[in-house]
Length: 196
Image 1 (cartoon, rainbow, N blue to C red):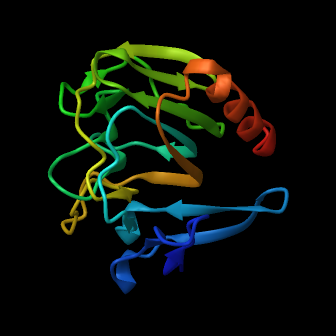
Image 2 (cartoon, helix red, strand yellow):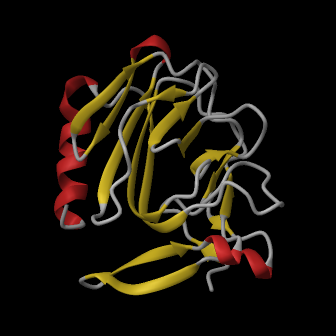
């Protein structure tokens, strides 16, 4: 079981809030690279406290493999009631940052690992799978408020909206990385790293 998932800059680590809610580290998930396994039966999730708000625009990269969905599954969210989330319901992904949620019409794939890329930028927001744009529009203008929950929704203690699958990597950048080619460069690197 994992108690802490270290952040690259060392100050915004993800932690599991209780013994019974700890996900599992899977060594050598892809080559020598590990993954973190989230299971509804364990009510497993993790939280990171940023200690600050990340205002829009910001760009988020998520490498993830989904095993199954039950409806209402949430893959990430803010840690407080001002929410920015990536969720699933009714056979399709949904994205929310104060408006919507926007239901994308895209169904989850239970076979392969994918890179999900998000630009949260008000009416100019965008969402890609494997560096191919799948949706754009107004997801809202919420800041990423104080922290991030992965594996379920924010402040979850009741065992609902739980993810069933693996998260390999999460990268958040302040600013619009879709402009100037930085998003494409980073996406290609992550896809090569994880065999996508």
